Length: 431
Image (cartoon, rainbow, N blue to C red):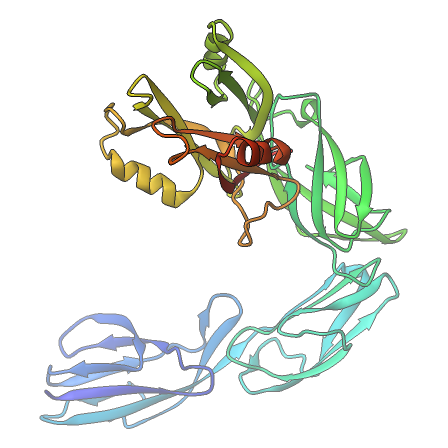
């Protein structure tokens, strides 16, 4: 039917601008041009406020229009048939962002000092240094380490960040391990990983400096005291390097979780063995351990696997499943542990209602939180691999049992001497 096409033109305005639209006999609404108005006969009004801010650092500024019956009011009559085209022209302007990290190391000047710069404006960015630290390079819109660079302003806000450090590598922090601290002990040796560390680097936890051991430019060790942490919650950590006596640079921050008093950060999966059944069993539950310690035929092997008691974005849950009456003619069951999502889905699919049933897996809960394997199957330090061996057919018929171990020697003995199937590394544990 009859239509009015409201076109939008101008460098940097490809994503449109807000337009106040009033249909004949209607009330004003706000939409985005370019757009299409249809059918209703009479005079339509299309108005653009100017300047029109998009956030705090982008704005669109009206320049001109074309095709309106009355440019002053922005009105145009709907045709009886066919299409009428009108055009709003605007320009995008952006407010550049400048930052020197730390500020005492230099300053940034622009060849155009206006607060708002038009899309398409040629611009030269200059960095003046004070001699405090070494320039490690640009981030944001610029890259490399040239002190003076030229660009053309685009539709996005230009960001010019110059970074300094006491060595020619940016100071960054990527991780801290462990990422959870509880009441497991009086102090914890945490490993901070990142870039740009030096023997003089300081680690600040919740704003307080802790003793540091320098390992290399990417690794620091810091001794943390749970007693000092006080209240539970997220605790920020960052690294600081002195550039001069009055100028220091700080890294970005990472955080770890402090658990409430009385809660442990780790859980120990203790291995038990029953010689009569030739059966290995793991458990991190104190009630299980007390029960098995008092039962004839069960003994501790001395092997343990340490996991995190509380999960976070770096861990995966280790599920514990139980198959009842699944071995030795139904004389015993078998437990199975997995942190792999595909195995967890498979087990859930075998028993969707999780109701007790012969030879069907029943989910008994989460035993702890493990670390997933990397893409190459290895464990990221400081985590260690947990190997899985399976007493399986055809050599072992109706006698299934899995054994999990952090000891490669024990795992190889199960595979090479006893003939269990080698299922490799299945998850990663705390050292």
